[in-house]
Image (cartoon, rainbow, N blue to C red):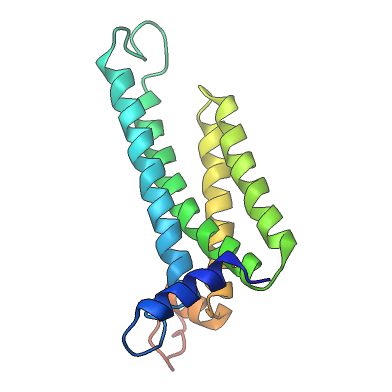
Length: 167
């Protein structure tokens, strides 16, 4: 039985002129993740703007003044997380690693559930950003990235260069 991803690739091959798929599984995973992330962000922002228009406005009578700022940061983390989750989910489906798919679902539930800590915004933002860093690293490694290249990037090193003492 073919996976939905394989069926999509076969459909793209049938439509292409040269008989090759115009997009790889990794590219499809990235595009799907970014698409879901942007849709999630758009709906989040529309809901936020609806809250701002009234009839009652959040943050006026004793509520936290950080509601809108926190919502913007939460929207940003969710856009990135959906991108990384798309990569992880596709990889799990492609290689039949059900624990990866389960991990994506559990991470999604954890981030969504962390918003129950609001209006203690540190209780939702800090864990969400930590989870985003973990998901980003995991997706990077699954996409063929190496720990050495990640270290070079974080230390702003060029290929083949080694860190200078005292810098």
